[in-house]
Image 1 (cartoon, rainbow, N blue to C red):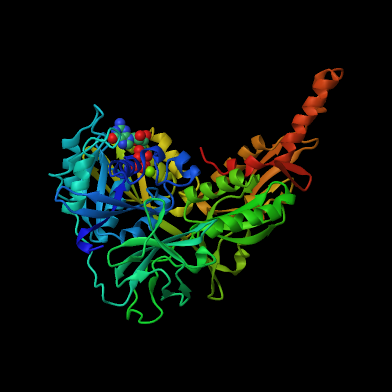
Image 2: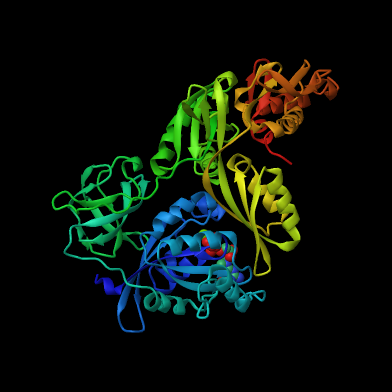
Length: 597
Ligand code: GDP
Ligand code: MG
């Protein structure tokens, strides 16, 4: 295709502002998908993503659009994930396109992720077309939101397009704006091949599928190609475009976006941001690489039933084939036996993976406390990356510990500001900025990631009744007074409950943990002390009283079926418990004990 008739774009929006619905309408109105095959959120491929209403993998679709000027244009939409955990995926797909539609819900206005995402688009030098969505709703305030876009983001919103992605109102104007307001790609067709590896995923039938954007030159089926960073060479089996189903194509030239397969074994062999060129006549210089996605949250995943370990291994290996940002290694825990230490981009990513393991592979899991990566500086001058609090070295050898910090931006209506400030303060936050953005407060906090990974987002939503929006990025490491807190149940340390805490908050956290555990652990025939300790010193203690009588005693001893039922119920409950020394601890205890109220 002649680059003059190509337009590449992405849609940036805060979650729920209507990105997926707009993509559906663009696909539908141009007849890209036959009406009978059309379904909602067609680009959000995985069921789980659809249920949770989030897009995880960047998806792409090629749309043929006969414009009013008489030419037919090829429009390539790269859909990007909207959640904070995946902001890295947003940034990389931005590099593959020239423009963005900035979708803002006209009843809500600019939100934290609107800002984070649009700044990434601006960083990637995009031309930006503002689109005001949900104009069908009576609460829509397009004029106010336009002003807000101009004030806060600083781009001209006078010719923002007013649409309803739900009813289809204004969609033809969006298509014309894509053609006339976004720039065409550029690139020399006769130059050596230079293509960007935008994304890759594992397809059970096709193997690894690689999404590319051609910058210069031409790629054809059967070509011998190589990846500059990894040095690996492959022969192209298949070249296709996504409409959104895979449709074979003979070649892709400058500005075009498509996929190929080439007998690549695993997603790990493809590096996002790598440059693809021909083995013969390679391009001289690689594209500027992207930063690799590094896991920032780690936790242990153990099967509830030790016999499921091999199944868990198989399931994790399969999942990892499709998700290169998820890492795992085997772990043994004195209390939990064999399992895996897994790394995630953030807490949502962790939840998605855990859900998939439990649902798609039907494995009951114990998830240990999520932990960030600490830098432990030893007295001998060396530094260890600590992924698991249980591995914290002896304090006498440690010089100091550093923890990752984030910069969090929160937008919130004034009435909830006090609660938000308190929450951030409670989580050891340092306020950096407080301004007003079209009637709402925008606070910027420097926070320890450790205080955010567990339940910060849930707490934020609950104290603001869902009105706050939140975005964050990592800023670096800083030293603080951090110690390992152990939990002892019946005098035995439970390594899966060990955690790193700030010394000043240790008593408070320790007390909360032992109180929670007292409620979460069922009574036994004997009395159970539950303690929190730092380096052998007990800082909080509760005692779980012993069970007086046999549980079945209250069934009047006579009714045999009731007694049997009760015992069966107990047995089923037992399946979700693990034994620690003489004590059974239910699965939920591991995650619930850590939640702060
Ligand atoms: P995304 O998170 O940005 O992909 O948002 P979705 O496309 O999933 O939309 C979020 C919700 O808003 C869904 O319930 C949509 O049905 C609804 N929605 C999207 N566009 C419109 C619109 O123009 N009008 C109305 N009334 N609802 C809309
Ligand atoms: Mg969506």
